[in-house]
Image (tube, rainbow, N blue to C red):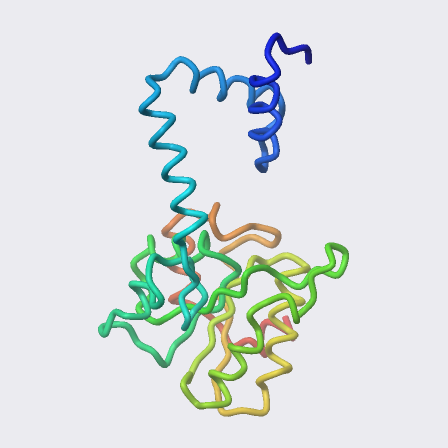
Length: 205
């Protein structure tokens, strides 16, 4: 791809680093920005800078937050004894959109994937086990995607906590094997939360 401007080329190269964005799409986005009033680009830049410099991780659930305690964890109407274990904020948003879950979350920040160099030590698993040890949780709902990595992560966590007094369940398989939660429709996802099954049963099945 030949560029008439080095500035344009640099901008396209940076935008194309984003997931799912190729060089042609990046070029289209950059040219779109060039056609917009300068104020629009300024607002976008300020929003991204604020995101990088001011965003926090909730000290309780590790969700992305503006404050040290996210809105969900600070909501006194939520059931603190039921914790839904998810991969990232996209899954929190997907489940919240169903309106079927009133407990809290624990965001792992990924899934165990040796091929990608991601082990248990790279995820927020230790803090989850600590919650169980301290008897802060009565039920853990595993809501990771039904992929090999998701199932491996579920099983690893289960083995870490099975000796403690905590109920473990997993979302019902209304979510197809291999599907990511963020792409599931709200009705199916909502039903899979409500009709969750004991985790031991999912292992045998």
